[in-house]
Every structure is written in C-alpha cells, then in structure tokens.
Length: 282
Length: 221
View 1 (cartoon, each protein chain N blue to C red):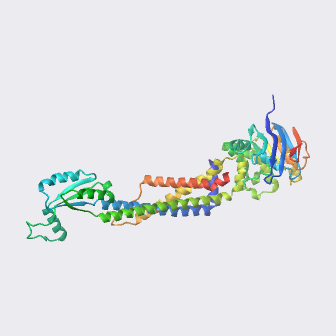
View 2 (cartoon, rainbow over the protein chains, first blue to last red; view 1 turned 90 degrees about the vertical axis):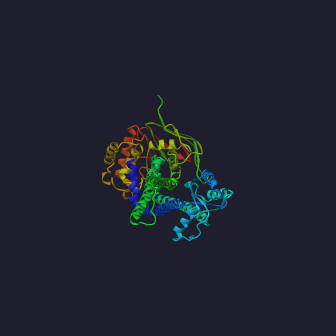
View 3 (cartoon, rainbow over the protein chains, first blue to last red; view 1 turned 135 degrees about the vertical axis):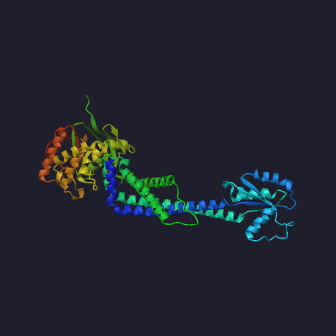
C-alpha cells in the first residue's frame, strides 16, 4: 500500500503539468455537465410549477338541463386523471368576467346572460401531457351536452417539444463530455506511463503482477476523476450563493445524487487509468 | 533422497523472429545448491537462454521448467512465481530508472509483501555489504557502471532468491571489484543458492559445485 501511494505521489510530482492539466480540463468538462444538470432540473421544477396551474374548461350547451349537471359532473370526475371538477354557473361566469375586465359588461342583460355554463377540471400531475390531455379532450367532446372544450393545448405541446429537445441536447452533451473526459484522462495517464515504460518491464521481470503496476495509475484516475467532479460542484455552489433570481429558485441535485455523480466520475477515472496503462500490461 | 531440481530444459528449440535457428535440442538441468557457468561467443544465444529462463520468450518445442513450474505462453502466474525466485544481474536485468537505489534493492521484498521492518533491516545489510550506503538515495542514472553492478547484486540477494542468473558479471569491472564479485560468487555458492552465470569468457576462479557448459550452435555441451 505504501508503495502504491509512493508511486502515485511520484507520478503526480514528476508530471505535475500533466496531472494539473487533466484535473483542470476535467473540472471544466464536468462543470459544463453539472451546469446543464442544474439548468435542466431548475427548468423542470419551473415547468411543473406552471403545469400545475393547467386547467381544462368544459363548456355546456344552452339546452343542457340543470337536472343532468350532477350526473355529468360525476361522470367527468370519474375519468382517469381528473383530480377535481368545479361547476361554474352563468352567474359565476359573469362575476369572473367582471373580475377580469374590471367592469360588468352584462348590466341590463340579467335574464339574457349569454355566458355558457361550464366545468373547470384539474388533473393529477402525471396526466398533464399533450397526448393524455388530447385523449381526455376527445372523450369529453363526444358527450352530447358539451359544446366545446378549452385548455392551453398549443402551449402544452410546445413546452413538451422544448423539454424533449433539452433532453436530447443533454444526452448528446453527456456523451460528448464523457468521451472528452475519458480521452483526456486516458491520454494524460498514457503520457505518464510512457515515461516509465522501462521501469515497468523491469518490475515485471522482478515478478510484479499487473495489479501491482496498474494500481497507482488506477488510484490516480480515481482521484483526478472524483476531484474534478467535486471541484466542479463546489464552484457551482459558490456561484449559486452569489446569484439569486427573483422569478425562480435555482435547484441543485441532492447530496446523494452529487455523491453518485462524483463516484461515477471517479469510476470513469479508474476505467481511463486502466485504458491508459493497458498496453504496457500486455 | 533425490536432489531438488531448480531448472530443467528439455529438447528446447527456438527460432528468432526472422526464422533463424537460435537454440536447438538444448538440454540443461540444474540442481539446488549447484551452479552452472555457460560460456559462448557473442550471438551464441546466451541472452536468449536467459529470456527463456525468466519467461520473456517461449520455446517453440521442448519444455522449460523452473522450480517445478512449466514456463509457457499464458502461464502468467507461473512466470510471476518463477521471476520472484530469481535474482538477476547484468544483461536484461537493468535497474528501474524512476526509483532510488534503495528502492531498487528493496523491490523484491516489496513484491514479496515483506514487512517494512524486515525490508529496512535487509536493505541496510545489503547497502553495507556492497558499500552502497553513500548512494542509497541516488537514482540509477547518476551511478557508475560498477555501482550499477553492485546494486544489481544487492537486489538479487536481498530476498534470498534461490536462483541467481548473472549475465556477463565481470565485463567492464576494475580489478578490485572483479575480485570482490568473484569472492561474493563463492560466498553465494557456499550458501546453497544456485547460480547460472553466462559469460563470454571463462571465470578465473573456480566456484564450488560448479559445472561448466559451452553454448555452441544453439546447444549446450
């Protein structure tokens, strides 16, 4: 163990430029991914907040008898995903219109209120997708007493496609960063091993096993990978403390998620370390 | 009771990468406590023989057995086991350039997993035995030819390796070191360790339990 750590410190002290270079470049790469991660979960939180306000309004025909309203409300409420159904009478619609416009536009039309009666529906969060909402809309529109259904259909579709695009970008970015981090670490470890190739063959001649030779480089990969990811997060947390938005709150992953990420980065470091040294172990 | 066999080569045949025959029908047997001096001109295959003995090359036919382990392609564990029981000097057994003299000497003990205290004690013994105390912290690149040979001897002896392979041990040594090394070889021989000495010239001093061979046309006689 002492030999391994001595070798590790020797690797780092003899090639400080290579080690520091790969640490910095990996920190930047991981930080880019971490920034993307923070942006993605912050926008996801913002999006779900907006989505929770999404309602569907079901307008009824003038001919609908008041006696059928309760059974209709029950039918709609029993549909999958419907969380609540609130009845809006003509008077309530008029009051709402007055509230929105700031003046009662229907003065003198007390007996001829043209505003339709309606139900306002809210949904469970998992049902708030463009496809499910369209299905519910179609099912409700087929009911004979329903004149039409209204909700922010286009907004929902556009937001969903934007989210899908962000996810795709994230996957591509993740893959590019993974590849860049892997190549950077493999190359820096390869550079360090190349300088010590003669020592390697001599150690093998003395009976050193592959693990004995590889371990300092694997530990180095582990440390550089894990540290780079950790330093990236520290910089992001520092930035978060300094920057505050009034419209929304910056959301960061949980400590467990960050630990898993740093662990994965360290694992990537180990794999890169192995790939960097593999040729010399043959 | 039959003597323990340290190394046994039977009908070994080996060609170079370019197809030239290097060793043919080579037979060799070394018992524990015995030593062998193999002489032969440059290019006769002495270094190739060393490479066969440490598992760097493999016979195309015939068998190479050391300490009861057959050395063949893919037998990594056996090769490791054999290499840890061999102390090498000269030729392919260069020092590790990236570590100090003391670390070079201690390496066989590190690989054997010896405790730190044992390592330090034996290191001190070797450094004083070979007069290397003053250069213990230096790196091989700053050593003289004689010092390098002494460090290799110290490394080959520190773990009491049962077999020492010495490739051209006396080449380029001054008179004093030459005498010192031959005296040391006598001590090693008397201690019961086996030696295979490969040399282009015949040793001036007779060693106990020593057999002489000549490597000619790829075979030992």
